[in-house]
Image (cartoon, rainbow, N blue to C red; front, side):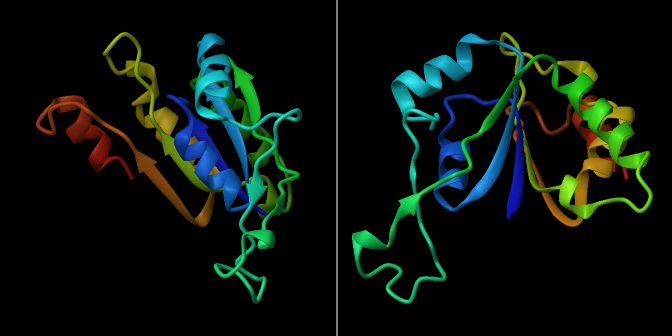
Length: 161
């Protein structure tokens, strides 16, 4: 199974889209009201209200609406600071020998804002290093930024290896 992680949920449309494509998702959200809002108004899946999943391996994929099946992978939501979660995950993965790729994420979407500002502790070298440990070698990291691309913090983030 493919695994994705969302640091910052927003209204949950990206999480919902990945769930539709059978991606097991982990949500890291600091505000407990956000997941409830996403479930109530935007259809974020729950055990009580799962989403159908698109099965691209089905030969009738795209032909018949009956090719959908119920997704067993309901997003796991963790309320708290994404920095602490990512750091804990990195330490757990780093302590394993051999490292189990199945514990790493295929996709990470980093979309954290707080009152219109970027939480600075989520844009540090240490954060990116820990995130790198939790991402598969060929994994994809998407960073959502609504800030000025000439902002020193953004420039330094882009330069971090």
